[in-house]
Structure formats: C-alpha cells, structure tokens
Image (tube, rainbow, N blue to C red):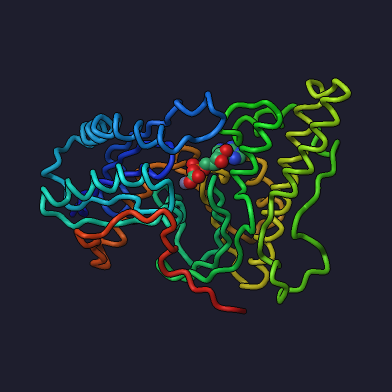
Length: 350
Ligand code: KG4
Ligand code: ZN
C-alpha cells in the first residue's frame, strides 16, 4: 500500500525547491532551482531572493508535479519551510503552500528548516534514524545535538557568532572566490597544502572541561579575522595568487578540525557512536574524511548526497510526513517565522 503523497516547498534562502514524496521516503518528483541573481553581490540579497522565488515558484512546483506524474488534487498534504530564514523569502513559499492546502482542503504542515536537514539523510538511507549525535552545519546555523528519537533532541552546542557555512562564504570572499564560498574553497583546497598556515581552532583546547560553557560551542569569526590578516599580508607582498589554495586548504582544515573534535566530544559523552551530519557544509569531503578518521571503524556516519545536503524540497516533505503522522497540522492563521525555535529541542544541562 502506498503512503500519502506530500508536496514539500522550500524557499527560506536562495533555493526555490519543490518535491513530491510518497511518505515516508520515496521521492517521486524533485526540482531545485538555485538562484544565480546573487553572484554579482557576493552574497544573498534578501529582496532579490524573495522576488526570484515569486517568479519561479509556479514553474518549480509544476515541474515537480510533472516528474511525479500527478496533479495537485492527488496530493494528500502540503508541507513548507516555516523558518528560520529570510522573512520575505519564507513568506513566498509559506503563503503559496497555505493557499494550495486551503484550496485543496488538505492538511497544511509547517516545517523547521534545520529539522529538515536532520531528516534529509533518511531519504537515502532508511537506517539514518535516531539515536544519533547530529552536527548541523549550514549557511545560517551550526548546531550540535543528541537526537534521542525523532522529535526529541538534546541541545549540546551552537555557534556563538558566525555559522560554519558563513565562515566559508566570508573567507571565500576574502580570497576572491564567488558566492557560495564552500564549494569554491573545497575545490581550491585540492591543490593546496593544508599545513602551510596554522590557523586558530577557536573554542577548542585540550584542558576544556565538559562543564565549561563553551565545551560544545563554536566560534568562527576569529578564524575569519586570522585568515583576513594573512590575506592582507600576502596581498602586500604580492604573493596571494601563489598562496590562495594553501590558505583555502589551511582554513578548511581548521574548520574540519573544530567541527570533528566537538562532535567526537559529544560521541564520547553521550556514549552514542552513531553520527549524522546535515546542512550545506556537510557536503564538504574534507569534513567527512576528518569525521570518518576520528570516529573509527566502530562508529556509523550518516550524511545525505550533495543534492540532499543543500537546501531542497524533499527534506521538507520528509518532515511533513512526520508531522502528518503525528497529526501536527499548522493552523490557517499561522505564519512564517524568521527565528522559528527548533521543535523538540531540550536545553537541559548535563
Ligand atoms: O544548508 P544550505 O544549503 O543553506 C542554508 O540553510 O544556509 O547551506 C549553504 C551553505 C553555504 O554557506 C555554502 O557555502 C555551504 O553551505 N557549502 C559548503 C559546501 N557546499 C555548500 N561548505 C563547505 N564545503 C562545501 N562543499
Ligand atoms: Zn539549509
């Protein structure tokens, strides 16, 4: 027997995406449109993002429905990213999805963007279910948590300033790479010597105790400043072109080191040898290799393919299936929330 057909819409940042899944795990149609309007500005311009979603959303949904070989009336529910994200961008998807659900008289499902990243690997690997330690690393968030079961998450740590993806984007800009910076830095690093520069590992020291407030927390703005200082020096001496890939590789190694070390702490303290990484930065192969190396053969590491690691509608539909199963339907008077709290996240001390 086939499960309910769920349309998932994602418009929280600069991807306009729609997917139809047959709950809980089968992707029937999936379209992701990445906006290239922002390249010129070296970062996402909120107003332009909202307009671009508005221009594309009809076409993206139509294509996803066509791929899934269904019409809107075949849908059993409509899910959408409710937050966090850019309010103008979120509202395009939210209003569109709510109007469709209302017109069809189907359940309307509001999804947290970071919880969607948490569910994404399960679309490709049904075994990627809690319990696991999760490292969620995107352009706007860096979050370490212990997922006890779906919908029940113990908060461990987060960034105190820039998100991991934001650090990649800012350092890429310093080095003259285009937006988004993560893939550009990863590619340049392949040609670089990551031991050439020893960048700081913020909030990571050997004698940190678990009770320390920053034991699981991250900070990337100081690392970015350290890279900026080196870039200035290299520009001054006219050697930046020759050193660019080494700076990129050394920066990437510092980020991978900090992210993996804190994740390992969580594995040790929770006693949970299952780890999941999600969000755009989880597509980074250097980070994955660092985690695999440190976790060892006993542990399991779950991650999605690059397509499902970055923002996409399928992960939104996947969480929609979970909400539907729990009869957690969003009311018609609900709205998008740019700082939506993570559902089920418990901030309790060890
Ligand atoms: O999850 P995502 O697609 O969007 C947000 O929720 O923010 O993540 C986007 C972020 C960007 O900062 C981008 O530079 C970063 O993920 N990213 C990467 C890689 N691919 C994307 N960072 C490092 N290595 C990559 N291969
Ligand atoms: Zn994301």
